[in-house]
Length: 196
Image (cartoon, rainbow, N blue to C red; front, side, top):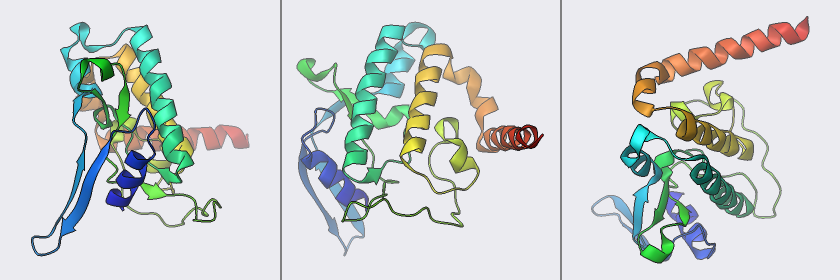
C-alpha cells in the first residue's frame, strides 16, 4: 500500500510532493524499495537546532499553511496519512527549495475513498494503535477508524507543540499510556457532563 500511495503522491506533481524516480520489490530478498528526490532535514531536526527548541510564530504559520495544502492534496487523491508528525515533513535540499515543505512516509496511509470517489464507511472493531501518541487524535486513542479530520488534528497538535514547548521536557509525560489515559478520561468526563 505504501508504495502505491507514494507513487500516486509523487506523480501528483504538487509543490509539496517530491519527485518520484522508481519503486519496486525484490521478493527473493524480501524487501520493497522507493526512490524519490533528495530532501533536506525534517521538521523535528530543524526544531532541535533552534535556540529554545521552538519556531517563531511566522515559521509555524508558514509551515502550517504548506502542511494543510499537502494533506489536502493527499486527501484529494483519496488517501489519509494516519501518521502526521514533525519527522514526516521535510524541507527541500537545494537552496531554492528550502522554504518548501514536503510530506513523506506513507507507511500507515490508507484509502478512504473507493475508486468511484465514494467515501468508504468507517470500519468497526479497529484494533491496534496507529501513528505517534504525542500527535494522535482522540479517535486513535479510542480505537476508532481514522479519517481526514484525524490528519488535521495531528497537524494542529504539531503546530501547538512546535510553537509552545520543548519536546525533551514533555517526553516523559507523553508516553502512549499516559496520553491514552488522559484522552480517555477527558472523553468520559465530557460524556458525563453532556448527559447532565
